[in-house]
Length: 216
Length: 395
Image 1 (cartoon, each protein chain N blue to C red):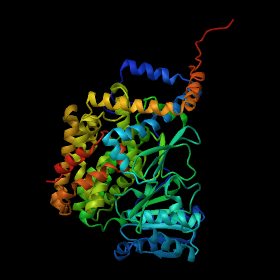
Image 2: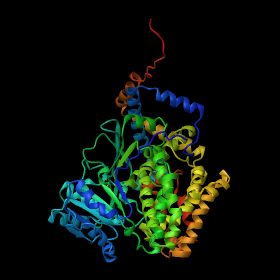
Image 3: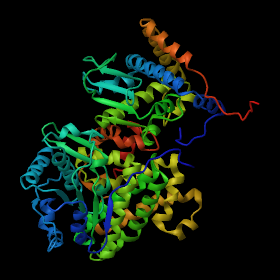
Image 4: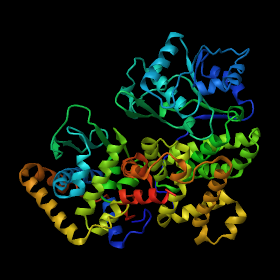
């Protein structure tokens, strides 16, 4: 998709709704999305050949962090000896690659698909600490994942160019497999999921706007 | 279209013009420095380019205390440590880099060590790992192309591990860039052409890639205009100091532009071709620029078309229908390359370089796909796209 392509009215409505969320709801949404993306990346790297090859390009033991600065939501992924990915709950050392959003709102822009990952880099919303080629590889992984799991209308907003060789059949097939694996993964850590969802539920209010109404 | 968000930062003082070198002692004194060390390379020394710099210090309060002239074409950790030792042994208090990209990057590395202490440069590698200002640091470019005198980046090789280590920090930016046309007047024609096309590419990509913004646009377009109007004139009249100054300023302006807007696919492929086939950077920029612009044209043709005004002038721009301006801008760049080939043999195709084989395309494409600048290209480029571009650029 063109970087300046117009968005559909439905997408714009969703974006306006997203912009209206209070910061605490944004925080919960970003935390949920970060968690979901991490799990989906782990799953997708076993299902999609292209993603598998991308992950294989990282050295074994390589640790990737994505985080909201300074100590907000985030995730750690580690490349294993067999080049599979695992999620880490925490990591004591310095990750080999850290992609850091400068602010919660910037992460929200990306995860609510108002700004593509590439545009977020171009807009200085985040910094990559580590070898740049590995950061670019991660962006390619995220792009492919988003193309697989998001409806095309939404994926068009998240990536610069929707992959022309991705057929609907392949998308549905692989997308459903990824979702099933993620659900199965969550089932194994149900308390964690319930905690994330309850945070989102209790904070999902919209910003109070000044309607100009008088209170005589 | 309004730019939804951008950042622009350019704190480097530009000291530009005839007799600019003679301003260095005053600028040093203003920062409280009196014992500068010069960092340079053998080529600069052999060509007597240090003479006017040293002459600028006659009767000045500050004195050049040491000269390190052993910078190799690719800066290394060992070189940085050796230069830092010389600085410390002589109790210097400022650095003056006199040279091109490698000298400037080395000097940035040296400034980290002599300011922060120790010999472990790797501790400060990566993004924004310096937390305070460094020693006074001036840059005197001897080519008009890299723009390194105004950037916040240094790339230094770890020769033991065969990797290039990037350093990015606002504190790496020099206090001043000294643009004196005496420093570039002896540049041979092919180097003049190659470095000017490097600057041209910085400006063109700064303007046409994803992180462009209104302020960097102003620098980029002004740089393109200066190069378009002066490059061929300088090749005809290499001793014309006014025209040399125009090119030097254009290079710095293009540096300011791309330092804030970044670059795109021309650089991704150029970096990769440099790493795999040792194609000099400026040559690669000149070579790949029209092919990449053609590739990007369906996504950002309008912005490419706007460049026609600065590349060819108002008359040509006005006479060209708006839907033909992008193609005309690209053909103007092609014509410039043809002229440069006639006058300096600056290659226009990969075959003309004599440095690359088609068997190397896979490796070049794979490296280009991983290059940091690719993310700022307006059009997503796949491995197959890059290979196709290399084929087009072959002959």
